[in-house]
Image (tube, rainbow over all chains, first blue to last red; front, side):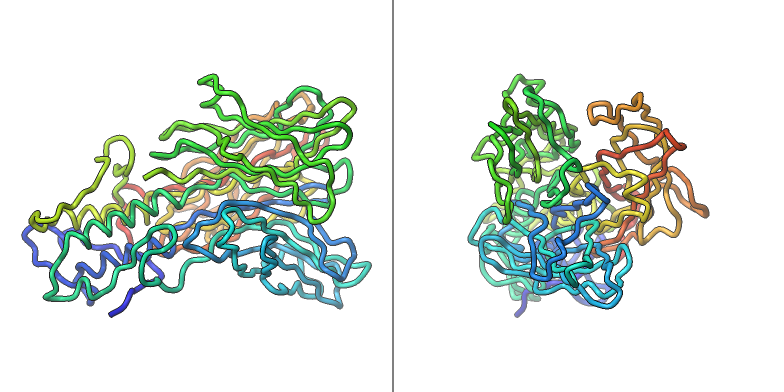
Amino acid sequence: MSRPLQSAYIPIPPQALASLQPIHAGAAAGVYGEQDLIRNVHWAHGYVTPQWSSTPFNSDAGYLQGSGSVPYVIRATWKRRIVDDLPNLFCVAYVSNTDGANAGKIRFSVASTGATTGDIAVAAGAAAWTRVTGTLALDTATARNVIRLEVSDPTGATYVRVRNVSLWPVNLSAVAAGVTTDGFVAHDTLETSQDDPLTTYLRQTEIDNLDLLRRVRTDTLTCWSEDAAVRAGFEAYTTTSLTYVVIARIPFRAVAGQDAIEWEANGYYTGASGHVQLTTGYMEQEGITAVGTILGAVWATPYNNWVGDGGSTLACAPESDDYVEVRLKAGAASQAYLMGLALWVKDIDA
Amino acid sequence: MKLPPVSFNPGGKGTPGTFAVYNGRPTLASDALDVDKYATWLAAVRKFQVPVHIGSPYTATNTATAASFAVLLPAYTQAIRWHLLCTGNGSVTLTCDDDAFNVVIPVIAYDNGQHVFANAAASSSGPKQTNVVANGLNRASDVTFGSAWRYVTCTAKVTDESAGVDLKVWMLRPFFVAPFETSELPV
């Protein structure tokens, strides 16, 4: 009895499952059958996952760095709805260290729980751009997690620099028994052993599991953070315009069943007010009003001015190419700053 | 399945909306084939979008040392294509761990020197090419075609056309080329 999970997909020859062929249990060399089907369903559950973020830090000098502070300082934040069944996040950063004698550190943390990757060492003299990685336990009790990048410089005068951060859920290492939070039903090899009955329940559950993965493992359009401490004048997205100006356009393709984009925005304004507004090509075409929010009035650590859609998702048409347009405006004698943006496809309804 | 079901489109046009296996009905081989087809579609044909790189533009200055980033590569990916929004003139050089040679996308997106996002024009890499033996081609980046999900490191570097005629890349989007209908899926 087991719930197998292998690290690679098993291509099954079609004749193994064809009409008038004997039904095999499978999972033996050269003999394919029922257990290979459940192995592939489990593999899809464990491995099929979208990337969450790839954030280049192009502002200022083309990287972010600490403030010359040995204690950790927060330098970037991301926010995204988690995939319930994939509770850990893989964090990749491309870094360098200006100090040839002393190591520095970075770490990723979850705002709601304080969980961290632990220290990720940036070796003394690490060249641009050296890859470092860590694993972060997400807060499965909170639908949308805020992820932070924290930097600890080697000394007060030398710096750890970060060029890019990429994030995605960690693949599973085992398939738990029972029904998961998302609704995936694990299979047991006992269900498909030789001489055991082949049930309609098994077959329907296999299909339901695959359909579930199609519906809840959805695409991320972007998940971006500005360098939270970027020098004035180097911010990517800022305006003093009293009317909305287009600052970004993000192309995507909605696949079958995908008809809404969820979002989160982070930013602030100086002066009276600052707003961000989002729309899609489909919404423009259909005359649907753009959605938006006012940004925060203060920008200070922990840089958590994230404002979500609150149900005001962006509409899109399934099976079509589209784009999200991002606009920014400021109030009178004001300046607006967009410091983070996350857009991902809403789960497809069953 | 040994071949990717490229026309299968669960939940969409051309594919039955529900897959129901009824109690009391005889066991059908087609039910097993449906499961196999769906799983193979998830493994080989369904390609997630890679989060778009936005923020400040890539420039020759901030990519003096080529900018590195990671791409989570789905199983059975043929190649990575590149989509850009740019202003100005020059070229973008892209590399990938799996590819022995670089990709160079020439960009002509002259904007009268304004360099504002509203003027940005789209460029993209050419398709996948076979038997590549040299740097500098405008094509998709090659990746190893295999059955495991893994990640690769890619780099981007911007080159201006000349002094005074520069290039800014406002958006960079890698996207995956799914296997061809006749591509046998390796173990």
